[in-house]
Image (cartoon, rainbow, N blue to C red; front, top):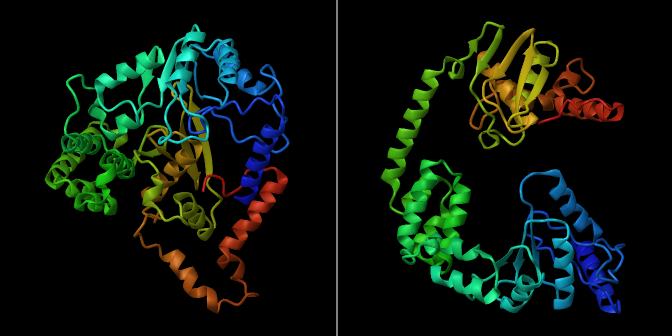
Length: 411
């Protein structure tokens, strides 16, 4: 952290010393596509036509390489002249629109937004300009959105914080009571199985000053969707909705034999199940792939072999694992190769009735090794078999040194 702060201080010092230095391009560091902090060896920008050339190359490449409209979001620079020079060059890359947050890079929401700077940009460019940054000072209700747009001469408005505080800000009829909005949001979150951490964050943004209230304290302590519902008097709704979702899920699985929870062997000899690997359901130190590898070693079988393919249509992955000449596969496709391989390992373990490392699951082989380790003779014949972690580390370094795939890949 100290080195990073020193780099920032050196960069600011160079900007002050450069007689005609162009400040940092001002891309919002919290938005996708923003460039990182400049390195200490970066050259000062001595002229508006000088770098950051990679910024314009990125935008130009995107515009030429994809068929969808490309937009860019920036913050304003300390100098209006430099800001206008920057957006002109951005416009020449061929992007469809530019969003302008009317604050400098170092400014926070409590600093006033510069409607004048956004307006000057909008009057300079021929492409649409989207005004952003008005939530704190300008936008408290729906009609304020149009007022902010007119004050900045922008084509449209991007609303962030005001929408988090109360999503009903987009209702022309006016804001709905916060309690009503939160209740409706929680119902949607449960019905669509939103992860409780995201639900909790959004509700905290809505409560804001009320986080220290009794209800706010209950929300802060909640560790599941059920506890969130109970904090807002929706415990019965959660139980009823959960029952309906489980019943619907069981009905869908019953319609598709291949997607059943029980292993099914198809005509090609591959045993299939509909399973996915959820990292939260497993111990941080143990994964299904580790359990399967450990079992194969114990039974003196060859290591599991994973054959993974990617579907071009949606870029999802499916893996088939071969153990003792039998193939296993999950019928559900995953977003990454590692997750697909873990799912295939789960199918194999469940088909054979073996532990897979889930939280609360007892696996005698792991505990047995822990109990026997202190009494094991380091030079005894069983020492190598017991010291599995050490052997795995050795194999990892050997694999990395030879360029082969590591046996820990995906764990």
